[in-house]
Image (tube, rainbow, N blue to C red; front, top):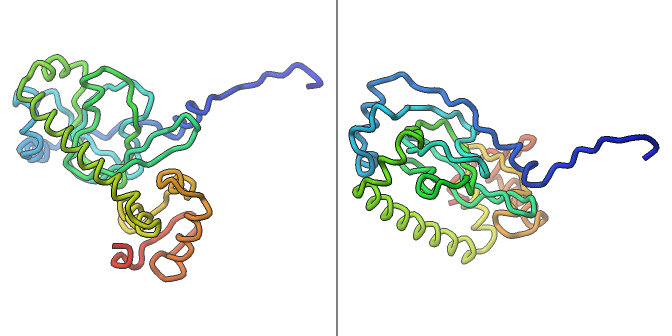
Length: 239
C-alpha cells in the first residue's frame, strides 16, 4: 500500500448469511382463517388449546426467509400452507439445498428443545401461511407437556426417516433423474431459479455436469430459459 488503508475482512459464514434476512412477516388479522387452521388435525396433535391466544397467524411471500442459519431461534413455526426449502451454509462457504417441505410441518422444533442457534435456513418457495409461537412465551409450557413431547418425538423420527430415504434416492439414481427431481422439488409454480452452483453443490457434482444436463433439458423442450430463470414446459418428462 502507498498510504494508510482500512480493510474490511468478512468471514465466509458472515457473507453467506447476508443473503438470508428474515423480513417482518405480515400478520393476518383474520379470525375465521385462524380458527380454520386451529382446527387442523396436524396442529391439534401437538398444541394445547390454551396456547391459541399466544399464536400469530402470519404470511410469508414467495422467496422470503423464515429462519436464518446462525441466528438465535425466537419462534416455533407451523407451516399451514405452501412449500419451503431447507438449506445449509457449509464451512467452505458453499450453500447446499438439503430438501424441501410442504405443509403441514414444523420449523424451529430443535431450537425449542435445545435453545441453540438455527443450524439451517428456511426459505419459502411460494406464498405461505404459518402459525408463529414466540419461544419466550411458550417454551416452558411446551417442554413440560408430555403429550406435546411424545408427538414431537414421533414427528421428528418420521421426518428423519423420510429424509434418510430421500438421501438414499438422491445417490441411487443417475444424475439426470436426480436433477429432474431437484427441479420438481424446488419449483415456484412452474418456474425454477436456483443458481447452478447451488444445484451442483447440493447434488455433489460439478458445475459443468449440471450445466450440460440443464442445456439438454432446454434443447429437448423440457425447460425454457429466460435469463437466469427456467420455466418447466414438460412436467411429465421430469417426472
